[in-house]
Length: 420
Image (cartoon, rainbow, N blue to C red):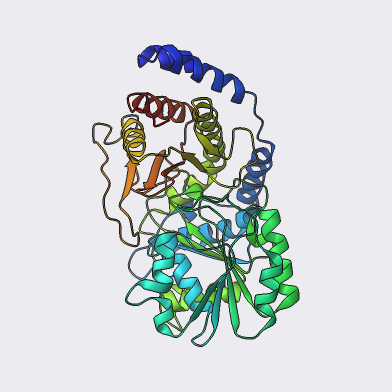
């Protein structure tokens, strides 16, 4: 495949040699967790017993919408949760997360983030925006990650020893930060420590980018609520919009009451005929996540071979579909983004430029040419224009497409001189 892509797209010399070496290094990598994930999703579909009439969606208020009800039941099975709400009207992962944080942290209570500062837009929603949570009477504290990049359990226990903490927040994925993503197993140890120290505290987990990457999900490991987007991993590139909240049934209903109205809660919300795509996308999602992992391992191997720091390195266990590459210079970010954009199936002839994005202090450059706008299961990249000038590559529903994206991004970088 790499030789064919190099020939077709005119890639030769040292880059071709590096690409062939990267492919040889990654072609034999096994993904045993993905086999178990795939089997689990297949079992969930058969246990759910979906019939064709369940694929029909409702309009208007959406009372008794069969597609919505069946999809949410199916999603709860896949995520190991008691209950799930997954709605088109929850427009993003951030929307789902903020709704859950607000519903589970009463005025006067404290929200404790134990994975360092959340990603920029979420921290803005908690602290800085005109209607931020702290302006609604919620106190907020952060605990930095430990020196090994994991959760600092001693600091967590100390923070919970006093009174006032109502909810603990964990962000699994790295966001736009130079930190590693968190594995379900290490988060599980944190959940246990929290429940041992303060049994009444609610544990909420940002699961964006992490769904179906590991064999177990956070809800199955002890988290009270998990939140994420439907146009990332779970959407299988077919979901057109939406996000979800899943976990303990009474907490899911509490979030629904905040999102919609007390007394109505989760009883309404039409799927508008898109339920078929949601269910079909979830069926395809494990295969697409595995393709993402294969493509990201190639990105890691190729750019490490070209002299760049990458995290994780090829072949390391992964907990999400994000690959960090430290390019080190603002010009390198521009070249990389332009090269990747030229490989995307939509808007390939566009040239990305840094721009202001709500919630981010610095301009952000993005490469995006997805069939669903914002779908980061499809190949894309983001990079804030700030030191250490890391680019975050996401997704790739076809490993072959990810290979091409890596090759064209690397070729674009070859024309940018590197500082010694």
